[in-house]
Image (cartoon, rainbow, N blue to C red; front, side, top):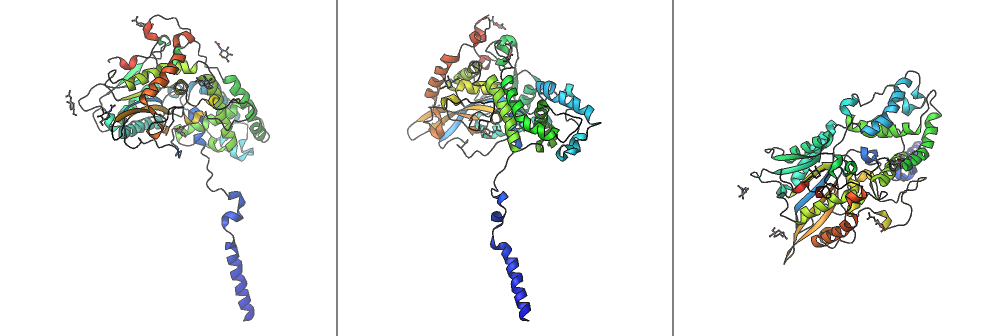
Length: 465
Ligand SMILES: *[C@@H]1O[C@H](CO)[C@@H](O)[C@H](O)[C@H]1NC(C)=O
Ligand SMILES: *[C@@H]1O[C@H](CO)[C@@H](O)[C@H](O)[C@H]1NC(C)=O
Ligand SMILES: *[C@@H]1O[C@H](CO)[C@@H](O)[C@H](O)[C@H]1NC(C)=O
Ligand SMILES: *[C@@H]1O[C@H](CO)[C@@H](O)[C@H](O)[C@H]1NC(C)=O
Ligand SMILES: *[C@@H]1O[C@H](CO)[C@@H](O)[C@H](O)[C@H]1NC(C)=O
Ligand SMILES: CC(=O)N[C@H]1CO[C@H](CO)[C@@H](O)[C@@H]1O
């Protein structure tokens, strides 16, 4: 009997003993429950649109303020694949892979085993390269719908017929513009018009594709630096992969191709086995690759950038400060990724040199402190918006400007005295005029022969259509 009691007692101790420690304490490897890494937030220009809860300034209009005018510059929605990425990185990998699957056993490294059965999501390159995917159209529709809620008061009145939305003239930007306008007027009569701005080499500054009309712009800029980084970060991955797989040799560009395919396959099929192939630091290295590339090509690393963005910034500032120029209160404009960084440079945002003299993009390690992360600015449907706020205080109504980078407030350096860190309209105009003074010579730095005055400025918003 006594023996039984002791036994019972011991049993209870044993069972309770498990609860003496909280689970988290025992399992030290799992101490930080909240850590989450979303690969899709680090895919640079191949990221589907996302909005992170940034815990920062509130994007809603500040108390007592109403948005009474707004101008958006929007990148087109998700495409199947970019032509350069396909021709130079992905397709060479696919071609070799197609041959190799007959004699290479990728299951020697279990996480690569899917390669033996995997087929490309790009099934018809001729029809798909540079075209919107289903999710690209859906997201653009959704954006239009969201804008119609946010700016209900700025939509045209039922009897107003001339509501325009502007787009550069390629298929994917036009398709996006059409989908946005459908979302904007969902359920109502479609009374908007899509205005095509030709992606013409001869338009000078009067364009949505200044990288095409500026003869000094060189799309290869930054490739050399980015490639040095690729050679560096892919080394350890190649070692890991190549030591297990025989009759096949992964090269640095294969790593780039597979990481890009994670993005493209996701926007086409909704998922991709490539996304689980790499570690967090390998994804951050991939993200860094494009940050290097774009920094040197279309951001502060290129002296041309603020010149390329200035015509849009100037024209938009005029629209927001002068009510007579156009009878719209909402200006939506759709174009390509390059336009977003160049207008940020023209606006003077994200300029790391203002804060540090350090080299911003070392090529032998990731600069985790950097401000510029392309993933945050140029995902598909990424956008920059200027909002004009009419704020009433007890004795006056005043106008302010606020900038949103996709859905987050981006204060203007040195001009944050207004509500919600906004900038007084007059101060904003002064700020832009100063920058305009420094970066207005588009035709000169681009070495374009001036045929007439109309190629010096962006004027298409003011035209009657
Ligand atoms: C258009 O409709 C608004 C009310 O929705 C009205 O105030 C305005 O006078 C109308 N304009 C014309 C030209 O009919
Ligand atoms: C473009 O830039 C690349 C890389 O910096 C350079 O090799 C090439 O010569 C440049 N092309 C032109 C036309 O300047
Ligand atoms: C970026 O900041 C540096 C340092 O303040 C400045 O010299 C440079 O002109 C700025 N670049 C642009 C495009 O505003
Ligand atoms: C701001 O809006 C009020 C009405 O809501 C209007 O009376 C006022 O003129 C506007 N202020 C400016 C500066 O446009
Ligand atoms: C100005 O030059 C552009 C581009 O060459 C041309 O399309 C346009 O017709 C010219 N305008 C005038 C008024 O000559
Ligand atoms: C989808 C997207 O790009 N979201 C980003 C918008 O911009 C803010 C600020 O730059 C980022 O924090 C978001 O991740």
